[in-house]
Every structure is written in C-alpha cells, then in structure tokens.
Image 1 (cartoon, each protein chain N blue to C red):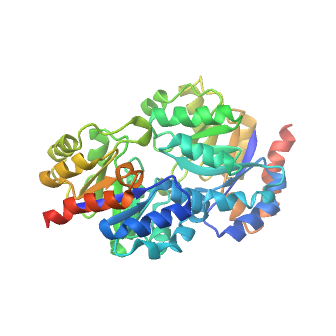
Image 2 (cartoon, rainbow over the protein chains, first blue to last red; image 1 turned 180 degrees about the horizontal axis):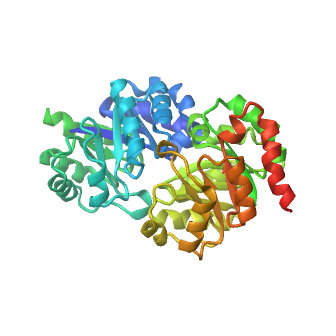
Image 3 (cartoon, one colour; image 1 turned 135 degrees about the vertical axis):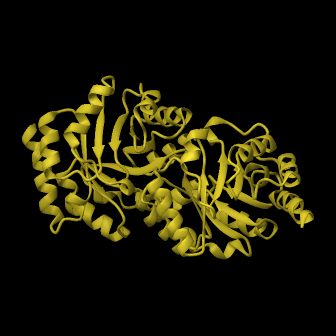
Length: 210
Length: 210
C-alpha cells in the first residue's frame, strides 16, 4: 500500500512548505483541486522541486476535454492526474490514452457514482479507481468495510484507492487488509498540529509492511 | 437573449487580447476551464480590465468543495461560476447559497445528465441551467429542438443556457424562439478568421431583438 498525502485549500507558499516537510515520508503528494484552480498547473509546475522523491498528483478532476487536460497536466510535471468517473466514457478513454502513451497514471474519482454507473466505466486496467466520498457529503464511515464491499462488487478492478476522512486507524486497518493500493490522507496529516510527525507515523504503517 | 463568447485552450495573452477585442459586442465573456486550470483564477483576476462592460464567467466546473470554490471564484471577480449538475445536491446547495448571498450567479452544467438526474437538481430558481454536450462527445445537432424539448421536459426551469457547437444559424433560431436566456458560442466566434466581425454579427442578433 502507498500513502498519498493531500494538500488543499491553502496558499501556494504553505503548500510548498508542507510538501518540502512531508514528501520524504509519503509515496505520493496530492496537490488538491483548489491549488489547481486557484494557482493553475503552470505555476504549480514551477514548484515541483518541493516534491522530493514522492510522486506528484494534481487533483485535476477532469470532466471534459480529456486529451487537452491530461496532456497539459503531464506536461506540467504530474505523474498522476484525476478524471471524474462522472465524465463521459469518451472523456475517460481520451485521458487513459494520453496516460498510457506517456507512461503516466490516470486515477478515476468515483465520487457520486452508484454501482450501475461504475459498471459502465470498468476495464481501464492500468488506472486507479478511487473510492471517494465528496467533501460536501461527509466522510466514509468505515474505510475497510467500504474497500471490501467495493472489491466484492468489482472484482475485475486491479488498482484501488480510497479517500475521504481517512485517519490513522483506518490506514492501519487498510494496510493489514491489503485491498487498496493507495490510502489518501488529507486532514489527518496536513491539518495535524505536527504534520511532519503524522507523515512519519502514517509512512511507517507502510514501510513496516515492506 | 444574451450572447456568451467562450474562450478556451489558448495562452493567457491570447485570451486577454481576444477579450479586449470582442467584449464590447457580447454580453458575457467566458474564460473556459482550460484557462482556470492552466493559469488559476488568481491570475485570471489580474486580467479583468479586458472584460469591459461584459460580465465575466469562469467555467470552474465545480464538482465538490462548493463553498470554497464559489467564494474563491467570486473573490476573483467572476460574475457567474459553473457547477456540474453531476455534483452532489449538497454541493449544488452550497454553491447556490454563496451565489445568492453575494448577488452573483450560479450556472449548472447539465453535461452527461439524463432526465431522471436533472429532476433531482431542479428548484434553484435563480440559477441558469446549461444544456451542454461535452466536447468529447460531439456537438448538439439542432439547438432549437434541444431547447424546446428541454423546456417541455422541465417547465419549471426559469433560466436556460445552451452550449456545444452553437453556430450563427442556431443563434438566430434560438433568439427567434425565445426559450433560452443565453446562447454560448465558442469556436464560431473565437476560432473564426475574424473574431471581431463574428462577435459583432452574433451580438447584432441580440441587439436587433431589443
């Protein structure tokens, strides 16, 4: 399992400083949608030194213009970009094609989709399917149960991530369970009194595994 | 009816120059999602002098974090912001609340929604419901028929816009028909050999009406 630390709704200097402090302890740094829309990926790309060894995910939440947005995002140094599962299948295919061509990764944000809608967008084998409760709808109650239920419903999905109020106990349980590839942690790391200590603690869950 | 000219997938200088040239002839200038994500709304806000008398729409395509994105967008000088109809009802409500509180406008992008999904998000009386075929799925075939069919299906919707390959003939027909509040025109103006001449021609459809 990998830990993805999500940084969102802060100014750019804060995002850069946080990234510098915590990127060595986690696998992926997510720069959230607010950073993309407030500052733009061209400006974000100027700050990628801060990411250290961690992979870079811009939470672009693409929902149309898949080819344009994915080309632009990867040119702006992203390793992983997100597309909404609610986008058209045509958009998902275009994003996937760009990601595959460039040896980069597409993450599909499943926010708001029911099982019937998810069935329509299966089959992107190298993509990461991200189980995600929207910020505006509240948190996931039990991450491990949610992951197990998703795996049972969609056994063909090869790569799974989970996001939405994931805390330390969730992360430990998810790592033990072994279903998800990526636990996406936001507030529990970046809004902690000591984000560095928390990044280390979450990172250790994963390094202990290896 | 109003004409909204949509500028997208160009660099920022080009967007500013185009806006300066055409904003006097149209009612609303849309700065598209690519401008939002490539350059960020903080940088877009520094360029609003170019808009002249026209209203400013950022095609933010908000799908979560409604309150944050709408507050940030209006602070960055937008008059109108877009939210995806595919967002949760909770997100739509938060966006609407911010727009109403600030005497600004929410446009709901109906891209990808079927009738049953649209029924769930009716009732935002001051919002503009935008009929929209995704860029990746192809153009609207007959804009007036589409508008008439939408009006028949959703008679309670007070404000309607339409987007997706709208050309001059569509615009003339839509103005005569009188169903939509806003015709959103992209390539037919901004990718024309002479965008200023086209902006004048489209603008005249509307001014002749008055």
